[in-house]
Length: 113
Image (tube, rainbow, N blue to C red; front, side, top):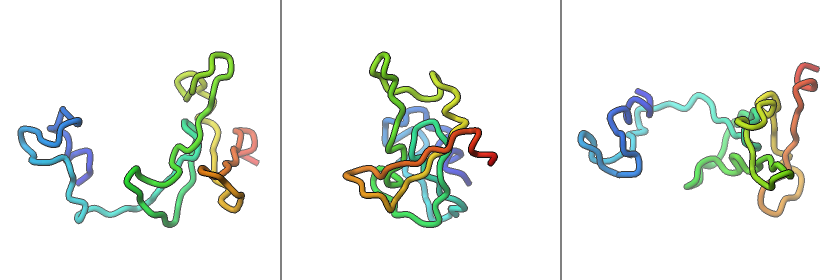
């Protein structure tokens, strides 16, 4: 059973209680994880992890970077820059970082090489 199918009847995700379930917390003892992916940059392909620690907010450094449109000083994703989805990113964990590690971005023409 997937997490999605457990929540199908729950329309109010902000609430801890719905008409048929006492809580929205799924029973994870019956689930298996086959892959864990982290996405260093919003709207770009990510990196498959062989192991990780899970924090309260999820996988550490997931979506640690975003693209900023300097013309209007806003954060943008694939809705505005569709070509971002053709790029991929990975963290350079051996590089010193203050909070979020530096990321290496691979452009589409480099992906096939």
